[in-house]
Amino acid sequence: MHIPDGYLSPSTCATFYLFAATGWYAALKRIKQLLATRAIPLISVFAAFCFVVMMFNVPLPGGTTGHAVGVGVAAIVLGPWGSILAISIALAIQALFFGDGGITTLGANCFNMAMVGSFTAYIVYRMIAANSDLKSRRRVLAAAVAGYVAINASALVTAVELGIQPMLFHDASGTPLYAPYPLHVAIPAMMIGHLTFAGLAEAAISAGMVSYLQRADLGLLRGVSGLAQTPTPIVTGASAAGASAESSPRQLWWVVAFLMLFTPLGILAAGSAWGEWSSADLTNPHTRKQIESASGNHAPPSSVPVGIEKLSTLWTAPFPGYAPRFIKSPAFGYLLSAMFGVGLLVLGSLVARVAGRKWPTRNLGS
Amino acid sequence: MSRHSFLESTLKGFTRAVSKALQSEHAASQPGLLQQLDPRVRVIGILALVMAVILCRRLEAIAAILLIAIGIAAASRVRLASLAIRVWLVVLGFSGVIALPALFITPGEPLVTSPALHLSITVQGVRTAVLLVLRVETAATLTTVLVLSTAWTHILKALRSLHLPAEIVTMLAMTHRYVFLLIETANQMFESRQSRTVGVLSGSEQRKMAARTAGVLLSKSIELSQEVYLAMLSRGFRGEVRLLTDFRLKARDYVGLTAFLFTGGLAVWMGR
Image 1 (tube, chains in turn brown, green):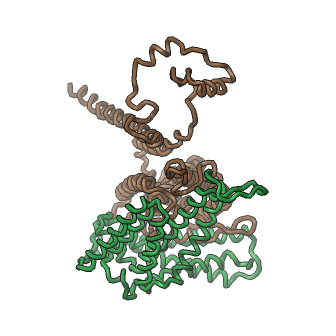
Image 2: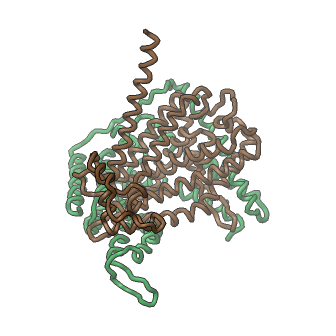
Image 3: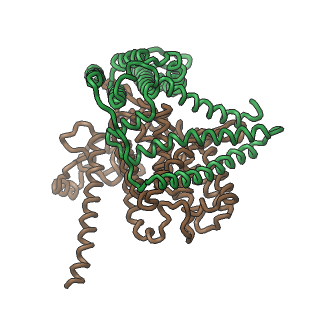
């Protein structure tokens, strides 16, 4: 899953460095708040541990072996923020010192494995383990599923990054300039290996380690257990009880950021959305055929309905067809429009939040 | 397949990693072209060339950078045989296999057609496959030459002088140090287990053994981090990280940096 240099375009690399840098900044800030001066030695040694675990050959059914990333265990013991840092540092050492994984693609690799992997593992583990006892078999199962789902989520994001390359970056003759396979090839090719070998290796090491820690070092599992707890040596990003109420909008921001990453998928959707036809769509014979087949073979009206015709000139969008007029590439225009739209929503919600904070203060004061 | 194949292959992996690191340390201490340049110039220069490889769209420009990279490697006393085994063959085996189907499934003008197999190799397919393999080979050669010619501590200092946060640089340095300690610990655990294993272990027993070893290693790592923390405190650590960056640029460093940036810029311009 380590993407080497040369598979992703410079703009993709830059975008994922930006995402990764945001994640690293947030994780570092969070971990320093929770662990203060202990953060550096703990994360460093844990990153070294993750590095070594990545070298373990995990025996799999059928006599073969696979390698685990260790993201399941890292998220279960350290929590998502600590796991992001530890796995990222391990990946950076692999890329910078051992030449495994590219330097230009390090941001994307950290985003895929450290960020998507850690949060997926953490959420799945917490959802399945719920409030079960620390020594219960349910936690072992939760760890196995968390490791399996996390590694497959990382693989899926990696496949999407690789799969959008030929669509967005090709020369005039249609030659893909970077990873050559479109999504319908990249996703199955990547997922087959991860749904089987890599997924099983991660599940086996996550479950096996949680089972071992239940008997040998229960304290290490307490951090992200979700149970009422006493202070433990490992403090996690989600362990502070008082943080839960405040963290929900923050989690929502992460979801928004995560969903923004999938905006390029919209470029793949062919044709118009059902029911969102313009008067031009209703007069064009090609789009009329598409509308007919999408509407259970019911032919659209032969002429443009008067209401649609009248109202269609009432408002002209600044970015008609999701592409600003001055941008020639429709795909880039679509992406820009998506970012602009989300940016407006973020700005609106920030304004509302500031106004919401000030309003009760004024009321109290009056 | 050997009955202890998983133990042995893990042990071999550890040995390979340590030997790679030793090779790097040895190559970095040789007097060579890159070794004589300031580490910051090496890091910026090689990164500029890697960026040029990613930005170039023409095969000729990428091939020219590969030739330059080989020239730099030879001048920096990096053995081309080890570069071939460590980089070229590995990349060809991995990216070559990945790129192979692209010859057939990339739509475009047919170059060779086999009516019996209903397959045709397209011009665009050949170009994209060669572009991918050549790009990956060139970028991997450049990064390996950097790694082999620069001590890890110097790479870190160069990163710090490029304004990477001090905490991250410290973590990278500490992780690198403890990777070898933990590799040694894991190696000893596996060796001792292997020496006491008589008979054939079932798949499930092998998995349990791998997980248990990883679990013990985790406990040891946490203990180690506590000891390291106490040692840091005893030496006056209060959470602030200060690193020494005592590099000074000489005239040849400026010449080297200009040469790297000019070559990268020229390649991007020629290969656009």
